[in-house]
Image (cartoon, rainbow, N blue to C red):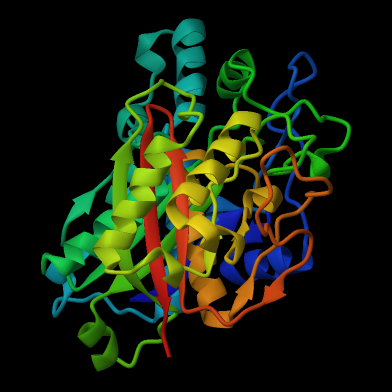
Length: 407
């Protein structure tokens, strides 16, 4: 059961702000302000605005840890508060944390390397290593709330956040925990990361119109928008949630994983890995394809990736593909890399609870082969029983998760 949602993204700091912005059709994309990007082919990104780490950590802790940890702690705080979950001696051993990051503390790595070169090795902080390693967001959350159950940190590129939620679901199923704090966090809008993605020619060049740059399935799409933030959900075993009278957003009923085994960064053109991961999630949930009414798609706004996912949906769902709705909230948030799946699991839980489908922004003219119901421009009231969300990552790693309406 999803009993809490915590979101930090370019749309806002806090779950309510994110949901409101999605329904109002606002974009979180703008010019890069983290550094001088004037020499870069891509000069736009989805930066988190108005975030003050001192609202979530004391000044000493801020200095000791990278921004991805700050975002993770903030989103976890929102999620724990939303769920009203109390972690104490009576249950601490049965509450775990699975929070991953695709890249980890790259800003701190870049800054510390500069210190090393300019000031020497004796000026490198003793907190450099624990301040930037990928698992430290999960570690810090565990320490903050005293959660002594399973503690892991997947690093599966852009599938990280979804894998974290799916792995937490399985840990509860296997009776290793009663409740889990799960999701992803990322903060890599840095000179090196942006240069690397630019070198891959993976990102949009629509610098003069940033709010329109992320346009999944549109004929004018030209790459993804790098973004930052965190998405954390609280998962609980049903009876555990019932005993404490917890609110329930939705029930997680299926989780699948697969590998493309095809290319380090490109999906298979026919979406073979995506086909198998959705089929795996359906099998795990014990559902026929026709049970799914909505897909929160990976939908990054890349020419090849968007079409590959559409082809996969058609293979899995057949004629039903034209009856279900598909949208990409990355059209508003950009692509949060390792945090994307956590953010989108949180958004899916909100959509299930409120029975509203978030729209795909900027879809003015669907590209060739992109002919499904993509919920363009405006949110849509729905009567939704089951929904699925996809995440795909470099290295060909895939994840799909299915939620059911709770009533």
